[in-house]
Amino acid sequence: MTDASKIKEHMEVIGADGVHVGTVDHVEGQRIKLTKKDSGEGAHRGHHHYIALSLVAEIEGDKVRLSANSDVAVLFEEEEGGQQA
Image (cartoon, rainbow, N blue to C red; front, side):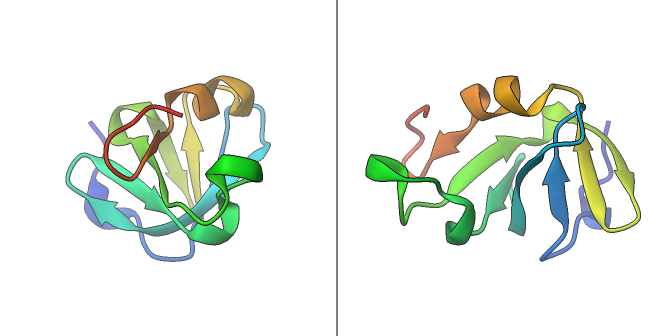
């Protein structure tokens, strides 16, 4: 289980493949809220997205590494309101 207290604002979230997924806004419950600047394009633009803490493999310095590759991790992101992206 990940120690959520080690996850801080502005840490980079990367997939297991090393690809940037987002930037931590803060931890909210059992998920990481990402900053709006990493929200993507189109209908996703301007919305906060969330990554479940269960996807965190480890915390390395100022990076949160996920257990899933970036392309898979974004499938598990949730938008505000709990809707899956």
